[in-house]
Image 1 (tube, one colour):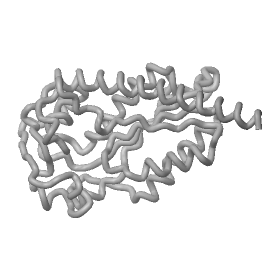
Image 2 (image 1 turned 180 degrees about the vertical axis):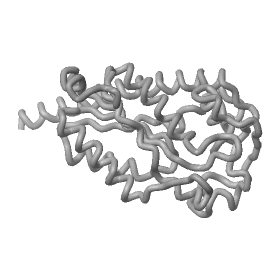
Image 3 (image 1 turned 135 degrees about the vertical axis):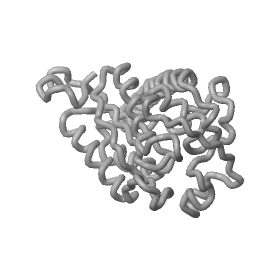
Length: 247
């Protein structure tokens, strides 16, 4: 695996054909979790996935579409068109150095612009395969978490993950809150208008043991999905090339 600690010469000699590019967020996570929560989580999963593929690990993007948190202190965001442009530029730079496969891991559920921009990039660069294995919803595993049905933000799942990744950053005070409205309200009003504590879920149920298990599951699932997706795309391209040759 190669990352920001590698030299350009080392990366060139290794000639990685796969890159892993995580996208996080800097946004409020209630009273007990740091604003870097989404960023740290996607960094951790991205590193595990890159290690499995001996890939180039692109430094995870800290900022993305966190407008739904509004003026909450510490929250930063990019406009959808800005995030789309950043993703395009990063992937174009990877292509220029011979990277043929890119795994984009989305660590923030609000990044709806990723789907169209990845579709566009695949159409623009048919010599590449750019995929987006599901990451943001992959932690809700029945045999690990007890409250997945009410989880949304800063609850049992994210608290557990941060206790596993950086327990020193998790504050002792935890708030539990079950929202009376659905996730669609992220599109209608800033989060503090419908959950004053800035969170939705049962943070008191979080534990480091759950977090470690969930991280292992996340890496395993992303690796499996990546292998299967690349294999399916390669088969589609072979079939398409054969059909064109016969025509």
